[in-house]
Length: 193
Image 1 (cartoon, helix red, strand yellow):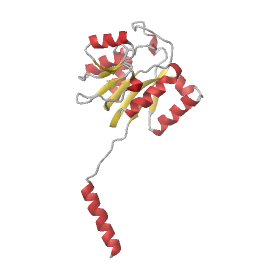
Image 2 (image 1 turned 30 degrees about the vertical axis):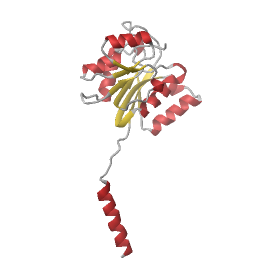
Image 3 (image 1 turned 90 degrees about the vertical axis):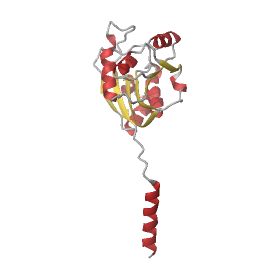
Image 4 (image 1 turned 60 degrees about the horizontal axis):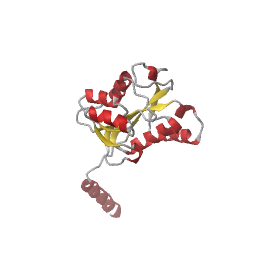
């Protein structure tokens, strides 16, 4: 399992960037031991979590989290207001996970994700396609401080550098169709006359 926990300060910053409020439905996929979920809980929301490792899933359940699935890439049960995540980086999986998370956002929802530096500097087809997609959806990225994942208090550490990606999904504004129809009909009648 590609497991490198999110440091508490980074997780807290991500939750703040997401703008989580108590009335929201929030998901942490690839939740690991729940460091991001713990910060979400601090603002008054009990998030849904997904974790593929049965051992880590048991830790999440012991913390009281609702483990809704084990395989995030197969999950499509529900849409969320906010998704906050630190997906696995191996083999460009981080980009795949972020794109899948975007599909699970409600209109007007926000996604905050950690993405490995490799996805932004590699020139392979997968990394290039992710960067183009991120640009198309209006996402932003900011480099995390070097050594972020070398905090010795974490269960596992890595020297990998990463960035925080923020994507807001456009909301769907639905107008009153009756009024719109009336206006179009009036315009047609004026054109005829």
